[in-house]
Amino acid sequence: MATRQRNSKVWEHFDQTKEKKVQCKICKMELAFHGSTTAMHEHLKRKHVVASDDEVVQSSRTAKKIRSSSMDDFVTKPTTCTPRQADVLTESILNMLVTDMRPLSMVDDQGFKEMIKQFNPYYHDNYLPGRSHFTKLMEKKYDATFEKVKQTLGGVKGFFTLTADVWTSRATEAYLGVSCHFLSEDWKMKSFILDTMPLEERHTGANIMTWMEEVLTKFDILPAKIKAVVHDSGSNMVAAMRLLEEKHGWASIRCAGHTLQLIVNTALKETTISRALGAARQLVEHFKRSELASTRLKMKQEQMNVKKNTLIQDVSTRWNSTFHMIERLLEQRWPLTATLSDPEVTPRGKHYFDLKPEQWVLLEELKQGLAPFETATVYLSGQKYTTVSGLRQVVKGLTRAVHQSQLETSSGKSFIASAEKGITQRWGSICTFSADKENPVILAAALDPRYRKLTFLAPEDVIRVQGTVEVLAVKEANAGTHEHAKVQTANGSGRTEKTALDNLLESDTDSQGDNEEEASKEDQDVQVVRSEVQLYFKEATVSKKDDPLKWWSENEGRFPTLSKLAKSFLCIPATATPSERIFSTAGNICSQKRASLSAEHVEKLTFLAMNNNLV
Image (cartoon, rainbow, N blue to C red; front, side, top):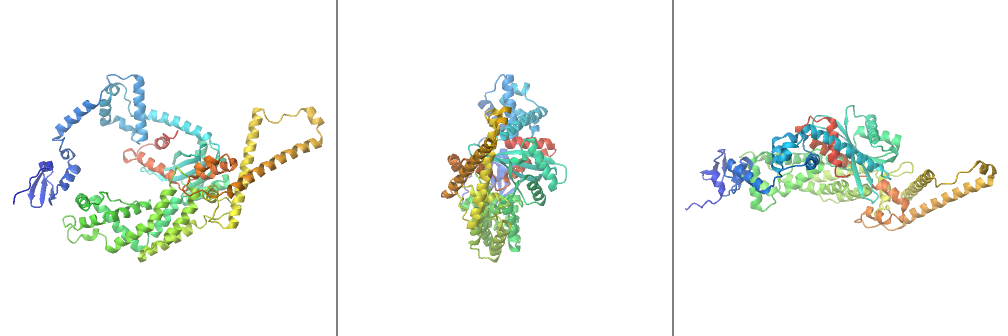
């Protein structure tokens, strides 16, 4: 039988040694051959990048010539560079280092210098600074950005909410991350990273309280301007928030994301579930480590017309990564099974990597059971819209979705029972409301036009909440009146100061009349606020799909006092995700290559990376 003609250029790098074996000419590695060149292409891409480019690269020397000529063809090199142009280029490099979180030492790397030389030889030879100069520029940029952030926060009329979390770097140095959140004049959610403070003492509640106060002092923010703090359930953080609540009246709000993590992790500890997840992790790890298994999987994906997605390894600190791992495994189940059944991938007697049929069934059920928690996590972690006002509704919907889940296995039913119990235990008091202590979640819902009817509360509790809103609105109006009076006095436009003769001739009835006039004015102001509150709660709720911030922007004139109150509560995030994102950024900055960075530079680089585009 005639041999089929081989047209693929991949054969320039391989010889067929046996009927079903080919050998790489470069590294002499043998691969299985079943009529397809996919495995050979993948081998070249992974092991011999230069050799894999059939159309351009014939050898490393030829490739270098082609790349060099291509650069000269496409880049017009300037013949000079003025000091002003040099400053612009240097600033551009600094912005790249900060935005992309690159090491400052990168400017001393040979490859970076060669690239700059290609773009502008004159700048490279005469102006390109070294690392020490870029460090000074970074510090100067930090100072300028810090002042802009401080100035912006100083102009905010309403309240702030803080998020706080503690993190440990690769160099085992601890940091306290603090972010602040508020609503701007045009009703847009705004947030700034205030600090990534290095911690050198024990993380006690008292110390964390002191550090939080130091952060506010640094930005000239008065403690009275803080409405609430969102934090995790760590005992030291809870103790700190209790102290701050007693001292300053800050509301303490547990991070909804962390609460979801605790609920799901507990539900996944059931023995059979734990074993199935362990087997799933082992399967993913096998395909991550084995080049042969990974290559064959791609072949099977192509043959079965399945998406060529890679497997996902979960992370213990993020429960939803387990959901994503399960979801991807189920998507790739049949290509995985087919790959593992190949004796060249899985030798005889080593089929333990594949999951048992009952484990695949359990993963299907877990995907169904975890899906509502994933939806809740994504929604509550948003930063561009108000989240805390919808927390009670999300919890209610989550409870309903879990209760209605039709899981048939005993392990699936165990997961549902544990999840329901966790929701009740950890969020059972979310609707608790008393006149003595504000519940920010309930008050935010009351000030959200989508939920203002508070249908999840008993009628008597609805009346209490409306009464509390009215009291807070009156306080807000009085505070505004006093502030206005101060401004008038400062501008000299207030009441005319009496002379000594006026005081002598004044009668008791004159003084009494003035007091009665002031009292009457205050009564009128209170009545106006009460009418405003009554009108607001009397109106129908808006659609759940409507944006409450847009609604307030359009109705601020109708409810001038309540709108100020709404800004205080609707800016509260439901999760501490913003402070966790600080540490994601800080983790990139404190990479293995830069683990020796000083704590001060970690703080400044993180501040710049997170706030650079916000001011």
